[in-house]
Length: 519
Ligand SMILES: Cc1cc2nc3c(=O)[nH]c(=O)nc-3n(C[C@H](O)[C@H](O)[C@H](O)COP(=O)(O)OP(=O)(O)OC[C@H]3O[C@@H](n4cnc5c(N)ncnc54)[C@H](O)[C@@H]3O)c2cc1C
Image 1 (cartoon, rainbow, N blue to C red):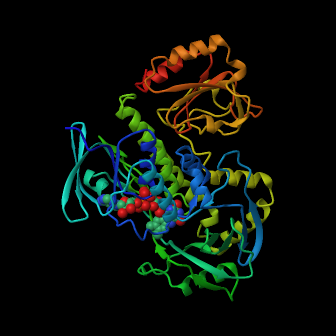
Image 2 (image 1 turned 135 degrees about the vertical axis):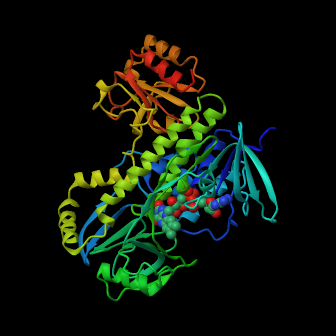
Image 3 (image 1 turned 90 degrees about the vertical axis):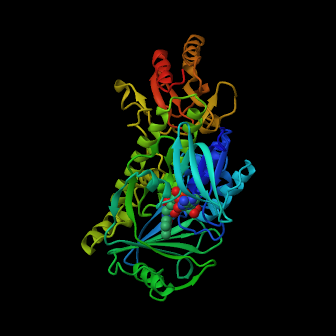
């Protein structure tokens, strides 16, 4: 029997919605269900970093989100109430050079609108309760809004059903990791009255022993306050009061007469978190994405971002396998890459000194370090690069093929291909490289100066039998971001370099495409 959908997405949070949009962009038949009513969504995350911005941009929704967001321009740092320095953004070469602050429920609203435009409506009040795989189909039992039940079938199911994922539990996939001890995260949306300058995109870090308070303006709604602190009373689970939040900020910022008012709708949250990654992200025709696959404390603000990157990583692979353009093993690279990304974020979170809970002597050392480092342009450049996520890579993925003797010479297989201005052989006008790439195809990139007829013929022949579309793109650039001109780079639909090899080795290109099951 023909399944109801190519892919059934369970959960319409930011990750499920991104995945559904990406799949629709590839003309897949998608159904998306969520047990919630669709109203009263919570703010939760509120920052999109540049790499997630680029991912949403490549799906055609980045610009819309930017129009509703504040772009982060910089931040001032205070320690024990004293100004220690400031940070300015804007050095990154990208269509999305700055992090954007926008509430999660606003992102969800914009993603829902885009998905509707692409012909799919979220089925609210529809809960997945059981999952069963039969041959080349998955049957999911749904509890419907009227209390009835339906068995929906799909060729693939992706569980984006959050931290407590029913699907993950039904499949018996372990959620490995542990709780963060002695740490709570208190958040709220408020309007402060303080002697500081209020400007869109400009935020504040207030650091103190065992406290880290971050305040960033949220479009139209005052500030999002994010506070990491120690946990003297783990039994206390109720949301913080406005006075508790006020005292925390006033103490860390050294502003005793600080006043706060709540914004509407009221959002005050107290959370304790665990760092966990699912043992595998695929069991047969069922995959896990977003918080269902990995979760951690929102330190560094990466939960939603990494989930969105995972959806961007997964959709093109799923479409290629479903259409028989690639071998099923392509989907296993999603597990390797996404688990690697998640583990990297958990590791970085532990090294993030801006949000670490430090005893007084170590806090004083942090202050001295920031005073010395913040004025240095090299430090600012490095910090901005790290914050962008552009350095996150899939170098250890089975999809990343790199000749060992080429190591250390520019971008490597598994890296995000840098953006920058190029001139393509087909047009005289300079354009950003990323605008020439497409989520619906692979791109074979080479330097225009090396694109002679014989080379192009050899490369074309190697791609001839590829079942996945490969576009050959010769570009000229004055920058050195493309690396060695004697190499070609095969760029994946999600913008990562899959293969980097010498131009003369079209045999390796052929081998790579064969490995994908596409040649
Ligand atoms: C209090 C709090 C504060 C946070 N703050 C930040 C932050 O500052 N920065 C940051 O980056 N991240 C933050 N996070 C994490 C971030 O919100 C998540 O990483 C993000 O929501 C993950 O998106 P998701 O789509 O995977 O899952 P979710 O947003 O959890 O969405 C899952 C969806 O699945 C639905 N669902 C669940 N079970 C079923 C079922 N059986 N059938 C059908 N539907 C189902 C739910 O109704 C929900 O809509 C915070 C999280 C919390 C809880």
